[in-house]
Amino acid sequence: MALFSIWNELGFNDNPYSQVTLRADEVGERLLAGRDKEIKLLIREIGDSGAHPSVEGPIGAGKTSMINVAIYRMQQTCLEANAQELYLPAEGDFQPDPDPVKFERDLYYVLAQTLIKYKDQFAKVGLPEPDVRLMDKWLNHYQYTSKGGGVEAATVAVQASYGSEPNPVVTESGFQRNVRQLLKDCFPEGAGGVVCVLDNLEILQTAGKARDALDELRDKVFDIPQVRWVLSGSRGIVSRAKSEKLSGVMLDPLILKPIDDQAACDAITRRISEYGTESAVVPVSPESFDFLYKTFNRNLREALTRAGEFSRWFHDQYVDNLDEPVPDEAERDALVSTWLMDKAESAAESSRSVRRRSWTFFDALCEYGGRAGSSEYERFGFAQPQGLSAAVTDLSDANLIVRELDPDNGQKTVNSITPAGWLVYFFRKNFPSTDDSEGLDEEVALE
Image (tube, rainbow, N blue to C red):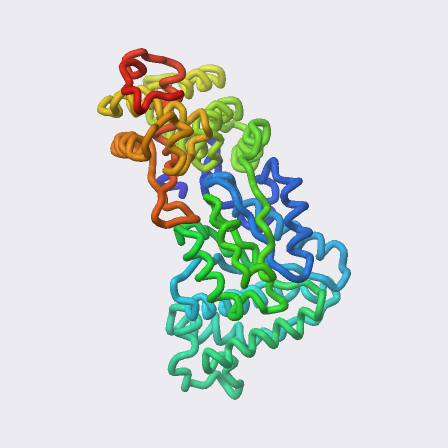
């Protein structure tokens, strides 16, 4: 990172505006802000036996980071209590996979690696330590590393011997039996387990596809007693995916809203403290980050992206350029505002092809929250759905709105404001124009 990154020159040892999901570790614990209430609720649901918890919220709200930190807090609480109970974060990530057999195979590999990584923690809480010596040897020191490529590689053509010790992963079914037995041995009933996160369910697009995928996995992975799952997704797909078959498998989702403005500032303050040195030049202060966060409709991921983009511009203008003095903190805050306004003006200029009647719908959709279904045409003053569809097409061509499949009905669409759209809306609020608000057809005029 030091060779090609701007951050060392700015006095940081890492990017404080990185969009990378926080991990289930001490750094993630220090960096997460504004989620104590939700974490407390999620921990209770994970710790209860029975149906698995789920989390739902808008894209960019930090769902996965919150889940990871919740699991880490459970793990640390168990270690401190020493009460024969242990919850471990899975040593791997999961997303929907069209091949349930591959998903199951990957799960057992992750479970094995989790037990290997945390084997020493069992004795610390008074639980039997899993005997993973041979499995570790075969997965990580011999067969797996020599073949490359996961459990499948570790279970194929294993004719070679490793001394006189038997191979615990000689077949895929044998490997899975060994992992289940290890889980059973080291996690007696009620003693905790491995917590896995099934993330980004929205990539399945419709609730029907999500139900089918989860139904496929129900008896394969959701019924392992020593494994707790947290299902996560956006766009309402988690709550809509719950079928009658899954009623005893997954709980109603914990609805995660964007963190409040003060928490967003706190998150950046923590990141600056974590990665910055005493001499660090902070491109985007917590106050300026608050400005970005509000502009992009409180999408944390997008605000972080824009903060990183400004930082690179700032570095090129003032750190790489020895002819320009480095601005002080107040000047940098003013620069963020000017820089974003220039970006907004450029985005608005690129959208001049949008028709006047479409702008009225665009402004109303932003004020409504930025997301509405195609069936809501009357809410926006359209007499026919075709009027809304024409406006959406106009705005979509300008990258101000994106069409997505309705989770409930794959034949319908949901229309959402894009980050570029929020930037244009910011410009229109600050520099209102009458040119695009007059002369609307009666059919499409707002009520």
